[in-house]
Length: 167
Image (cartoon, rainbow, N blue to C red; front, side, top):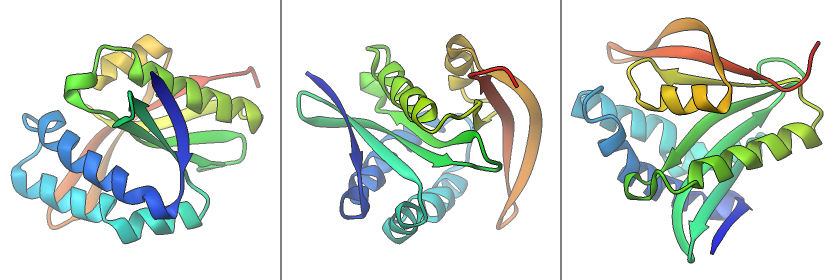
């Protein structure tokens, strides 16, 4: 049985644990171990995740037969009103290809419709194979960004958008 449920501050440790399982595989050919460790600590430490929940970000966990298998983090009205930003979107490597990512995406669409958003936005590493998945979902690349994240590291991203309704 597959279930998607919203999680709150007291459960963000699950996102932390999943990220530490997923990222080494997802980014092994893209990031150095040092950059990967730096980014995990920066983006996925439990206090940061709790602060994100408290500031209004929404986190959803997907489970398969009771086992945590992936997550998505959403931020309403970022950077502008009517936009739902996907900040985090990951499924365990051994669980990919089973429709779990699509279930998480469907949850983001439900949230976007509930909030009457006009589009979904996300950033994705330009060298990440998930770019293909996002394109299959209907996202288009709108720009490229190189974001300095400290310690000499860059996030080399595509900015992608999915229009939900016409402006």
